[in-house]
Length: 164
Ligand SMILES: [Zn+2]
Image (cartoon, rainbow, N blue to C red):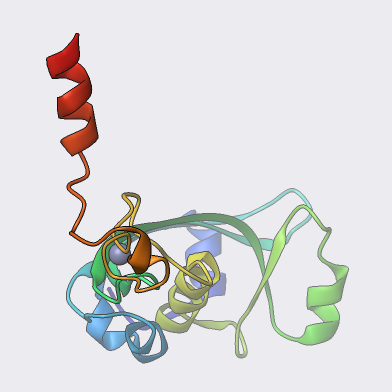
């Protein structure tokens, strides 16, 4: 996927672009992840709307690995974002964009797709991430005095089932 595109041309052609961007090329995103492996899948549609605005809609999907804040091991995370945007060339124009649409800043009509997609993915990155299962249960030392030997998670359940 090309890094920069001229939006006026694409919008007047109702152009659709789809492709992938390697996570390793998105430095700010990669810095927030455990691994820079993988690709972002990107679909972009450009158009001119009935108010003569240059429009872009984006669908982004990316599988990444982040650090679990509980066990400090890697965990997979799926990032998905969709956006309905208006392409603008400056902050004043961005302020004119109605609230239900997102202003997407270009530089003299040139959109840096990598930066745009990276910003989108950074926005959907959660502040903290935890494994869905209770990965840290055996790690903590608090309250360890109550149990002298390591508890097996299903030992109690096995006893209950034997009794019945
Ligand atoms: Zn974990």
